[in-house]
Length: 84
Image 1 (cartoon, rainbow, N blue to C red):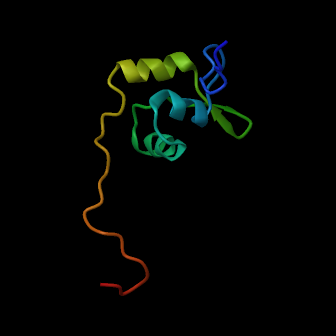
Image 2: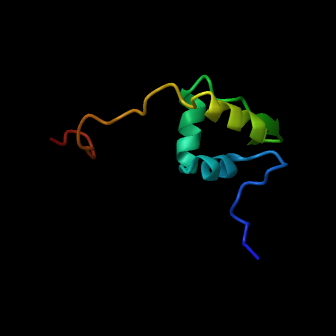
C-alpha cells in the first residue's frame, strides 16, 4: 500500500503547502508568486487562511503559469550598513 500522505488532496481546497507540493517549489515561492503574479488565481479565504480550488491552480499551470520571469539578484548580499 502506497503512502499518499504527502500528495495534495484531489477533492478539497488546497492551502499554500499543497500548492507548493504540486508545483514542486517552496511555500515562500508560492507567497512570492501570489504577490507578484497577477495571473495567479485569487484564493478563497477560510477565516484567515487562503484556500484555492485545485482546478483553478491546474488551469493556471496549463495556461502557462507565471508570466513573469523570476527576479534575480545582481550581486552578492551585503550585511549591515556601509559594508563594501
